[in-house]
Image (tube, rainbow over all chains, first blue to last red; front, side, top):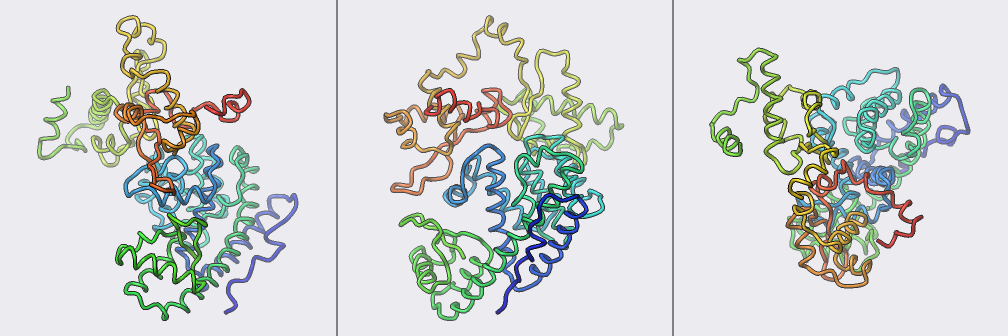
Length: 283
Length: 201
């Protein structure tokens, strides 16, 4: 299977450039990305893994140092309804944001401190291109609530995603914007966003091809799995970027652990933590 | 006050929308309700709870803004804390309040060591008792953790991925409110602490 093609180098990178050149690249990047997303990519899984990277950016913007491993741990080792701590909360926001279709009600539940009316206004923002609309969202949200970087980026990536034909938020800007970019205004911010979309799309496309290959491998070994519930477990692996065996609540704990080990042996799933206990598995 | 709130809840239909009132009186009543709810609560009231006492289409932010304007001449103000709001006295009146009753210090009633542990949790959260032991060089007692938890300054966070899976502790919105912070970003900058040699705290 050929899989998604990487983003051509001229789209992914450029030196200092005027805004129209950056806008040309961001448009080309989104067009390429739309083709990739329409191909055989496990989209929920792809978005969930992108959400992890986006959360890492947002955690750093909040002045914290947790890396992706610590974020995963915080999310997966918190009992249902518990408080995963300041960094874990950001990852939880992101993974919920990409898991459900974009809606005012859904985003309102996630984004504390942002009024539903403002979420509605953000989603209806006008502008010549999706990237310009996303930049306007960042500027508006941060003008009202300067520290709401995570909310601003979730809303911006949601608006952007709608612009290139997605029903779910897809982290792109959040992969590549730098903390200082969020201090920019007007054309400077729009330029930073166009550049970030091209850079973010390059990462997203390369992740999409990795995950497409991994998903093909996983589907290929699925018929070899005899455990009851293996099919449902495979579906979960194709929608969540990391799982504890405890997530397979439709099988016994022991069976879930055996299945995960077997999938690792078959090379279809990776153990993500390198630990002997409290292991997390994912593609 | 408290009993009024209870009675209002007991009524089978609580009229959120107040459709039979003219617009200005309706707005007025919503303002009063929000102020009453904030007044009755010792801890920050989340947005969703406030949204329940006003019409579904009403902008909570505009109402809060109006309330803030209304309270301008008063010795207390509406403050955003974490994801909610609370009424609190303005800092200028702290000396008067202390002179009258020494409320602030007594309400918390924590030792210096308790507060140091609380600060360590705030900066290093999520952190377990073992993590705190590494920072302070001695065992942090369950009693101390209990004192902080009973005051709702801390809650439990994720478990640590190691033997025994100890629970970590995280600070709460009550913690933010108690120390007059809107978010954890109001904590002193860790880099400043590094520079001044306080990083170990």
